[in-house]
Image (cartoon, rainbow, N blue to C red):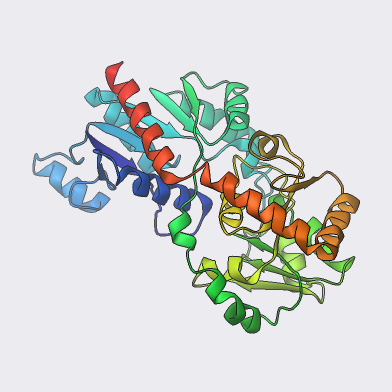
Length: 350
């Protein structure tokens, strides 16, 4: 089977959660009999595809099944082509109206229109894949008129090998000492930015957020405020060349996010054996167990208490980290590959 696994804006999204999830799909499929192509355009780009179409050779490459990972015009074009050609269409719901909120300036205002668009777009699919049962319930509430199957994004353990070897380099680079409380990924208010910074103000630990942030017109007020006026013990690193350095330097992943479809950074931290402190939201209850492989908190006081407990009890940190590593192993890419192949076979039979 020849599968078009497509992510438009791939270069811009290569360090995003969607980009990582797409890379992991392709890595998982590399161990199967599925042949993967990553661009729909004959010649490799839309302009070359147009030129190919004008010469009568068609604009699209040959494929047996299309699997799109984003929701923009390129994905719409692929979806329409697959439908016209009678080829199965799988759409991956990495984006929901709920998780788009508080990401950029004005994102809440476009929420209702985005919800209507997503209902239309995802309903074209022969199968919608999504990262969690929580996301499935969200999509059903729109409602999306297509079969929906939850499937973990998984975690690429091999991509994190050697993180511990970078510990001293990255701690020295960002002047981090003691128990380092950290976050990884783009800086958004939805990810719990204000909670992260207020907890830093209320404690004496070093806090570091490894990831890019926008201070331009698209940035939210919260992002502009906190990145320009960080507490003394908070470091916003901006872009880092090697994400392993973040997981090596940090000791406790603090992730007070308000909404997630799964939260790849959690699985990555767990794969590195880190203690993890999470907001108590439905999607995390689906995958993780408070007191076993993480600590979950509902209020800032509970977050502060969790950090103090972990600072005072290295054995607790070690136990949570060891259990977290075993949890991450349940999401390895071999399992993701098997589930993708099963999903493709199902829609092909139908």
